[in-house]
Every structure is written in structure tokens, then in C-alpha cells.
Image (cartoon, rainbow, N blue to C red; front, top):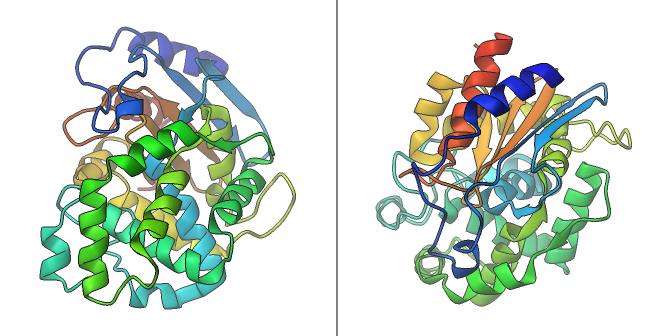
Length: 302
């Protein structure tokens, strides 16, 4: 595995300048676009990493996987009364779909769906930010994971479209709590800062039928794990999910911080970080890296 990662890393090291870092959140605009890292963790506890694997970045929309798992653990199948399970076919922050579908977001991974998930987490937890952070720390087997408060504030102050989404959803009765509180919790979950090793480790329960290898706890049921993986495959990269499934063939989730995590059920999780994004808001070097990884290993869920 070490040699394979080195080969893939070297093949992609010069792949820069074909996209741009996210600049609609001011704090993200200053990220060095040349940074690049890969980490793999296996369900028997092996870890492999290369590149800038110690550098932390905000996981942004990858956090939606963790909040979905947390709420499924607390709420079960009732969650699907408030959010759908279908690919969106639109941008991650589209308002049009919410109006057309009367406040029910198409899936939990578009921003509208994540806001509804966050709202329900607030309903179930008196200290939602603390609960979310502790949940991710448990998954990663590390207490050394924190919010990046500067990026959370930067995102909160520029959340014009997300505010519009939240108020529109609330007008249909599908958000219970104060919009500013929902946005505050949402922006903080997106600001959680991790490196690729921590990200791969925290996602590994999805490759292990919902069980955390670091403490033995059953985080969610095998059935719920299957459901999340299926949603990652069909919805995890927004309106590029079909292309990702075609090229990579693994459940995955991206974030505008440049991270992507992918799962091979029963085997491993892999996290890649490269800040430059393509037109869909996904790391183009990250996608190419994962395609090479899946192809060279001959792995896929198909």
C-alpha cells in the first residue's frame, strides 16, 4: 500500500492550476492550493499516509455524513419524514428545488438537507455543537479535534444563501428552531478541522458495518451504515455524483475545503485533500487520485 500511495501521489503532484480554492468563504480563500495529502485506514487498524498528511483543514460538507449518522442514531427512520433520499441534480445550495418540493430537501447532503438535519440535532441535544464535536472525536479515536472558530465565523457572516434556504424551509414548517442558531451550529460543524489521517479514521466505521474499531462501540446499525453509504454513492458529490460513481465506483463525500473521503465496505476508508476545486465544487485532484486508487487496486462496490 505504501508503494501504491507513493506512485499515485507522484503521478498527481504536479496537477495544480486547473481549478480554484473556495473563495466565497473569505477564510478559505487564503489556503495554499499546492497542498496535497492521502491517507488510508483499514478495518484491521493499518494506516498509510503521504504528503501534507499532518496539515489540518476544515472538513466543510463532509461533516454532513457525521451529523446524518448522529441523527440516525438518535432518531432512526423517522428522519426520512423531513428529508428525502434522491440525488438533487442541482447545485448544493439551490433554492429552486426547495420551493418546488415544499420545503422537503431532496437529500441530507445538499445544504438544505444538512440544515434540516442540524435543526433536528438541536431538538435532540441541549448542547448540539458539543455533541457533534464529541461524536466525531469518538469516531476518530482522538480528543485533539476542534472547531476552527475563525472559519466558522467567516462562514456564518457570509451565509446569505444558506440563510435564504433556511428561511424558505422554515416557511414550509420544516425547521423548528431559530434560524441564527441553526446556522451557528451548521457553520461550526463545517469548520471542524482535521487532517487526512483523522478524516479517514473517523469515516472508518462506515467500512465496518457501523462499528468503531477504536473503542468497539456499535455507532450505528449495519442497516443504517448501508443506507449512509448508498446516499454517499448517489448524492455525496452533488451534481457530480454520477461522474464520481462512474470514475471511482465507491461511496464518497466531498467538501469545499478540498477534502474527499471514500469508503470500500468491509475493507477501508481513504481520505484525500487538495484544495483546488472544479466547477462543481469538488477537488479535481482528489477525484483523480481516488480514480487512480480504485483502478490500480481493482476495487469498486460494483
